[in-house]
Each structure stands twice: as C-alpha cells, then as structure tokens.
Image (cartoon, rainbow, N blue to C red; front, side, top):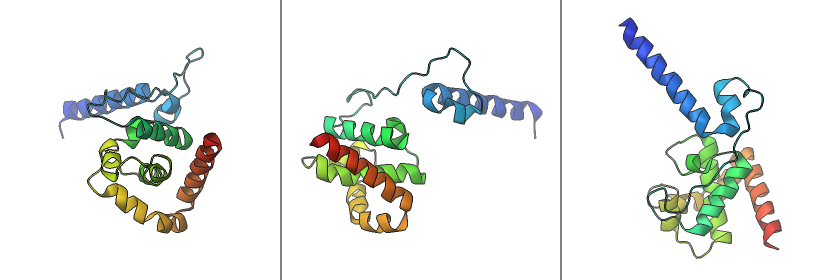
Length: 155
C-alpha cells in the first residue's frame, strides 16, 4: 500500500473522531479515551428545533425522542439517524410503543418519518414489543424506567 495514502486515511479517521467528540461532549471521554482538560465545561445536549432537520417532526414526538435520549444516554440525532446498534433499535422501539400511549394522535407513519425509518417500522416495533421484553432484559429495564418516569410526570 501507498504510505501517504495510509497517512491520509488515519488523518481522516482522527478528524472524524474529533468531530464526533465535539458533537457529543457528554461522551467525549468515551470517544477519545482521555478526560477533558481542567476547566472545560461540557455543554448539555441541545435538541434541534422541529424544522431544522429539514422535515417536520411533531412536537410530541420530538419531546419523546429527547426524553428517551436522556434516559438512555443517546443523542436525539443518533436515535433519528442511520445507526443499527442494539441500543438505538431498543430506543426506537421504546419510542414507538410509548408514542402509542402518550401521543395517541400521532400516526405510525408520522413516527416512522420522524425517526427516519421505513414505512411500517413503527407497527413492527409495536407488534414485537412483548417478545422484546422477554428476550432482552436491557430493553425491558429501559422501557419500564421510561414508562415509569413518563407516568410519574403525567400525574
């Protein structure tokens, strides 16, 4: 392989790592492997406005995504992004089921569009909810925690 090409790839990866750490200051230590410098204040997660992502996201879904993001330590943009890790799928599934309870006016299509998922994904998440509770203890714990916090805040 060409040595300069390898250096370019490494430089691009390091730049990407720095951009990800800057975009997720609450996870910077996990990403970079080093603690932030003394005196550096990490900024809280700021949820983007409804229209900034280039599409309309209903306010109730936006708030639900932010809530589940806080509970699972995931950034709302990651939840609405392209990733397919189990944590992200669990968060999206939790949002789909909770939206049926706490935002019943939202259609499944609106939830799919807000989460950038294909048509029918929300319905699939809802149909597989009982199986996921039995198969994945992490998902069950997350769902129960989120449901409890939402119920407590609602009353």
